[in-house]
Image 1 (cartoon, rainbow, N blue to C red):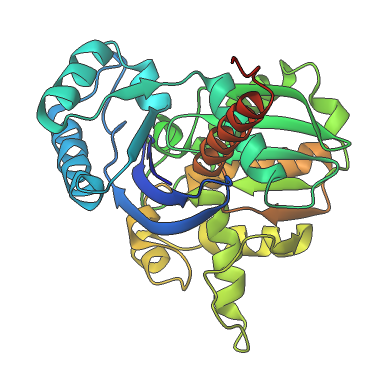
Image 2: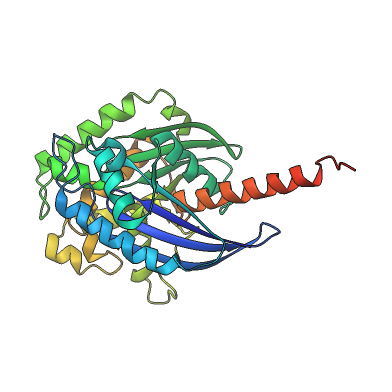
Length: 321
């Protein structure tokens, strides 16, 4: 038996997930915790992590450590994504985290992040053809799936926090600001040579900003129970547009009051949703399918596969007399 703790340090939030993995490579979830740390906040053109964001992150990691530090047979895998991999003071940040928390962060590439998203989705949803879109705080990952296989993937350096800080008013973005964001995203999408192969395919949406659409839809239904349970939930193109229009027509305080929209995300939600809206229009996708299984679930399944393969190797190892 192994206690497997996964830490996913993103640009906006950091999450901890602990699973108990049994000897037969089955598993049981033990704990899931999230803290909003805004690690990419105010990185600016100098691309450095700033002191308040670093302190928030280290405090959150110390809190996480208290959850798993005394567990037996502990294995910790801590990954850091866009904010950390883009930071010019990355080495100093990693060293400080290690010194103050004992946690060794592994900075994964955008391609690795996209691959983990793929593993998380295909191991939890019956997806045959589609395009995964994981919009984070400082990057967006895209993965084209055909016949259940990962065909193409890419990570683009724009996300909810970076787009908002660079171009959008956090209260009520102007038409010219929204146009500037749309033009930048169009330019990025134009350079992805394989993107047209996803035309008419559903978007499998990951990331807190994208999942907000599903939570809003679920909360608007008076008959909905367990409204936060959105894994596998579908929304039609028209429903997605209606939810985005509601957000666009609201100022910051009004957005904080929208059921299903987290107050912590209200200031960056327009920047966070614009990539998905642009992609849905470009690909003429008729629906979004929402997933709560991304990077962390991908990391878990990577570990399960390692253990299964190790078991097979032991089964077939030669016996010496």
